[in-house]
Length: 210
Image (cartoon, rainbow, N blue to C red; front, side):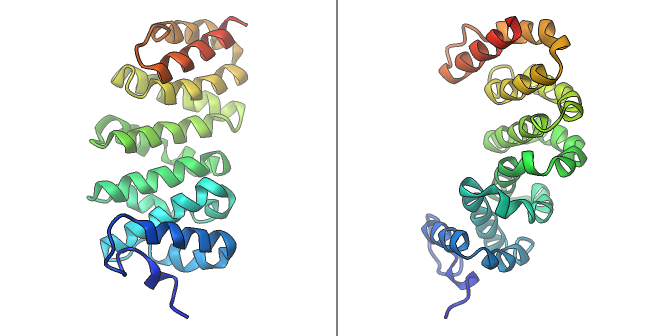
């Protein structure tokens, strides 16, 4: 039987990532295969490490618990020079953020820099989503996450506002004393031309007024 690594897109000289999705399905059925995928996340062969990160993401979409144990191994890819490596790793981390609050807390300063400087809009999206997921885990996490979520809005206006506002929902749930301040944030986007932003602003405002 061919190894699971040999079935990845880069090893089959394939473009489009369909083989990676097929590998992810196999990993969902046989989670022990993820051990081999995790070993190659820091492969010297960049395309292979990206494939492995993509598999982690695809599995996490269906069963984040399977990937949570490997979350720490994804962190190194956040410093990769390759955009795909960074956003795949960040996507996978965002999907397991609520299961790994201690890890995300330790990454907050790094995520703050990423959100400020990352050229990939998608990677920034996932970084903010990870912080929002972290904010859902406890009162203390919500308190720590708040300034990062607020700064993301201040820096990027409505570009990442809906991800940040999803996190602010959790902040209000844990820290109702911040309702007035968060209400003013929601009001900035209540008439946004971007439907997804407007929808989150309406949701957040309703919660802030309750």
